[in-house]
Length: 120
Image (cartoon, rainbow, N blue to C red; front, side, top):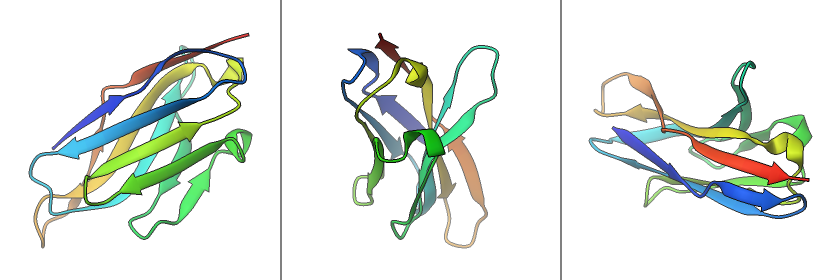
């Protein structure tokens, strides 16, 4: 299973970006999909999560500004980021909990990371 993230870049404060992450490979089903971010010297933190049924959860500092969604037919998760702030600058990683077989265990997979830089 591979996760390919895209959509990062450089944006001014107040601007918007949309991240995408597509899962491919031997996939039976995908449970939770999520976005994390990490800055140098700090732990990776959970930004947003969406379950297979569409329930969502957000980091307090991004509530009302970010929206996570998924397209189950495309095995893809999105993160719409609006009203971006310089403190949102980080490498963003997608994560998916994937079952590769009907009766197998679900495993954790990570995308390669995409840089988001917000200038003031």
